[in-house]
Image (cartoon, rainbow, N blue to C red; front, side, top):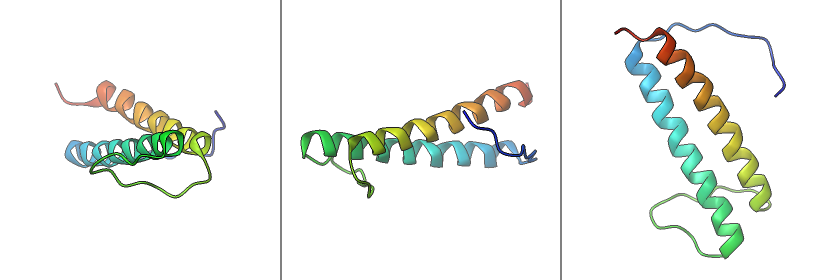
Amino acid sequence: MLHDDIITLQLPANDVGQVLDGLEVLIEQWEATREFHETGEPSEDVCIRECSDAEEADSIARFYREIKSRIEEQYRAQRPR
């Protein structure tokens, strides 16, 4: 993974939860897009994103999952008990 400059943000826990929820929606959409490119059949109730093929959709889904995972890891380490 390439690292850009590191940014430290301070957000209320609820805002972090909203960001994580939004990332999960994007992940689901990109995974559905990958499936659409593989099968030709759209998933019900999931937006299909624009990309060239299943491999690109899978790469984007993995990218968002990595971001979500890093945020969750930091959240677990900092959240109030």
